[in-house]
Image (tube, rainbow, N blue to C red; front, side, top):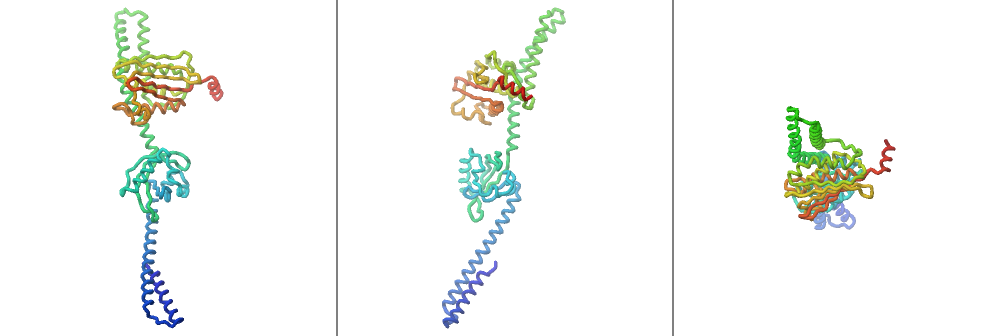
Length: 413
């Protein structure tokens, strides 16, 4: 620590005393001289200390910034909700060209409004806690407007001599997408596993018939009409196995013209044995003049299968499921699935479609979430109405291929 401030102030005191002696002929060594010199010495000493600590603090802050910049994780420092510093990783994550694009912004300009209240409560909690808060997940808006998922932890620090909040986080958007895909695949496989027993039973029935007719063939007592039955049973097996494989294997979403009536019939055939084993009857009512729809048939089959399966499971003592497919006046098709199940409590209706929120004891909630996303990707709507102990009605509305739309599509091909 240098003492230039102390030396200069003492010299000023001495020079002032010399001036007084020359001009006023006062004594040099007076009580005032000793008092002023002592004060100058003390003030100068405090000034030198302040300069020293300020320099140390500035050096420490520069080292702190260098350390933060070297971290691979994104770091945000904000005071009174205004960002005062970000590191290079944060600049890259936010899609900015330099830190000046971010510094000075309010943190709420970069946060999904849905999480604003949650962030406010977290900042209050950060300022009360000594230890860093555990990580939380929220969504942020990049400079280019793209929304990303971020996982971050926060703590209260001193930065630039002021109380600040430091948040360290990372972009988990890709990880969330991968997790979601894995969970959807897991849900799909679980559903197929439950269907496996029913399908095995369904296949055994025609195999038994075929086996009996083969025994008759050995005795040459088989009429020609029995061959038609054998072929019919074989086609039935082929249909069931084919539908099972279509649902099991992943496929690229390719939208083509489809007849929704055929999709419904295929799914009812596939799940019919499971419904019978659960004492449930499925009644299908389809309008005769339905227009075609543009869809990815495997995805829609997955939706219908999920919803009918949910209806079966909602009727532990059995009952009826009514599937009604009708044409609507505004160029749309309505598919309604009505069950007589236990229904859904009113307070749980708002959470339908959220992952991991389910009314089933061992469910994940991903099946219904997948249904919502598939119907949304088809520019359709999925609505659910339910009354406790009375049943549930699910309606899917899909746009039909009208003549004008068909001509437009053909003109582009």
